[in-house]
Length: 593
Picture (cartoon, rainbow, N blue to C red):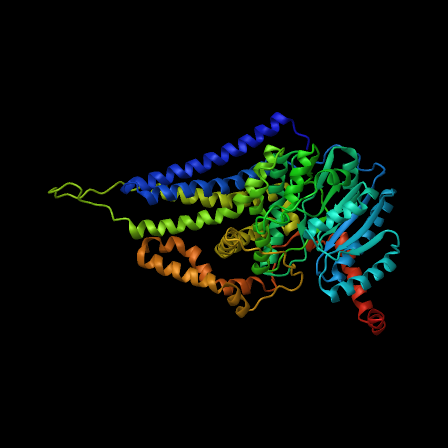
């Protein structure tokens, strides 16, 4: 993925120009539609909001188009070369159930041994569990199960565990603490999340790629979501496996050597990370001050500033993670991401950053304020019909014949088709291409892949108004100074009943009900158009509950469901063995002793 500078900037410029063309086209169409009965302040406001919102949608569509017209390919390197460097696998944990996190490390260790045996090579790789756990009982269980991990894997001298007394800086501070204390012992560090799982073969290939490019500071993989059970989770899992590789390909093409870091399932060169990625606390209090929350994007920008390559190798397989099982867990995680991205307002002007890094920060900020523009467009549309006087069909005094302004309905229909096209067409094109290149076979065949695509579009469309309000609330909370903190992720069963859904979303029901009532009273002509937005809000508790339930049926099939990856099979086997061992009276007595 070493692109020439001129070609890279040409591609970036083309993507920006296409997005601008789509946004300006939507702006002109709306002005033409609004001018049928004379332009007013609401028309101008709505046209501006459509311009901004369409720009954002078009940017995602262009990224997919670039991904569809290119192919993932590995950089030049010897995939069987001896591995000289030393690596450490870092797993930060924070109030997680250690039986799941530690058995993932055991599975990766066995997968590495299997990969090295198959290749006839050796690699010096250690594992470090970096605990920020605050719960005393969970910490006690971590220490007990760490002993079992070392014993089972014969890992004395290869597995390490430490728990910080003060979790300053959260995950970023946890990793920084390890790099400061022990980083000099290693050449590379593979950074994971507590739900990460990676094939040993993938880890070895990442080390070889790092050694083949001495200026490669960070190598990011594209994690696939696995083990989802609910309707919401399986739709996200399908999307991550089916759509995300195409969008990631487009992202990799545009970012080149100034790529992304998503905070996990990525390998860093320890020296580069230590030189560039110390993160001082920002002046002031959270949410805009304090420790950097979305540290990964900042660390990627700092590495690029230091002259290191940051790369997304989207051809690497064998990288996995788990996702939220319901809308509420997604919204809780998104609240943290929202605060972290808006905090980048304080970082975007830092001296020495690459121009593309600043652009990436701007993208992240825009991603969270975009819902405000859509919400403002809806309110302005209702206001236009409620407060603007109807057209005067008799503008000339004493003239007996009415004047009917020309209809511009075709412009409105064209605009609607264009906006929905930016949302739906890229995914439909991905589905069609999957039938031509054979990708669909891993998803149950072309018919099932297309059915899953349509079902994912339907579910995401129903969920979108609910998520829009959660995102809007998050932005407003941050803007008004509320610190969301760093809540523990829910890794277990995410099923929610109707009562829990109502408690979580009653305010969305109120907004949806009031919004539809106001539209019916003041702008009845918009009621049909706004029903796809308002009705899901009114039904939010029901939607949250139903989508959190265990899914059945053949839709949203993914390759890892049809044929689980070898490291997944290893993890299941080890987890079952550990669970049986720990349920015995002897193990319980040893734990309490």
